Image (cartoon, rainbow, N blue to C red; front, side, top):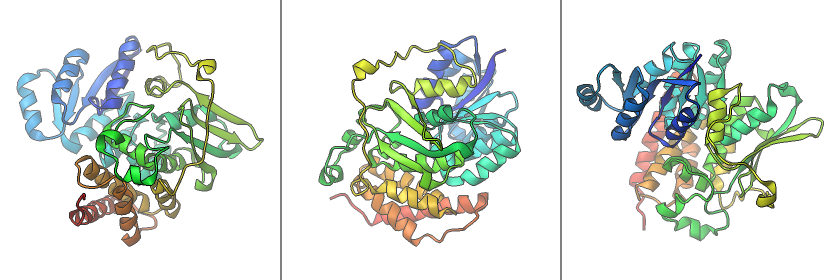
Length: 387
């Protein structure tokens, strides 16, 4: 029986790679729904190839134009479109690969309708991990991580009792500026920042990797996914990106997941779980050719965003949601040439300093805090010019 899946963010980096996985396993999947942002021409090609029953785009005008060109497909738009596709009971699984806080609402819609989720959106659990995980447990919904680090941890734990775990070890390549001094990072161009040494990802997540905010968001996400205290989650820089993460158990054993740096592997694992198939040929890992594996502590002086993320996660309340929103606005300001890379952290730190957190936030509190953070960021950015 074919597994019916929907891909939200089908024209982005993760979405396109997910469809390549689907192409490699044609006897296992059928595409039920697709959702895209700005790349409408690619979406049209995907609709022609995969023949989904339902699609969604960013705004109403684009949807109306598409209705003139595409027949026999239900066409939606906006946040409502994302949530309708995700919540459709025809789905066996929905891949949430849209960026930012936009991933939260379709994730909740899928959970409410008991649809399993492959989650490639960090911001959902960073902003509202307590709400999302509680609802998932109550509805018996599986949330399968797509990030290579969380996928690795999921595979290492392998349904073992969480009380047997001593520590999670989250690895990261260190990004393009691991060996640079602070002044070089401060003067980094957008092009240099987007030149990741190991992974091919979207622009936003690549900038986060360069500041190590990505690792910070992953720590918060790991806390919610696996129920592990922040003091028991360690970030380790591993430039070869062969060990994708590891778990230390209370008896001293450490189990790690290794593989070549390819997002196709964790994407396929999430889509086919609990089964494994020989799908897309990603190549085999040769330890003799790899020759060496290096590990080092992250430099929090050069990369203070990681420290800010830990602090926000430990404080809890609405701090993580504010951290996420501030960072998101700052990253796009950097990509648009409005601020330096190092000013991302300054904006986030200032916003967290003045934010009044709500201890046990509900969904409205999280949305309000997200909106507050974005307004704060816009006011802050209006005072900054790149010299």
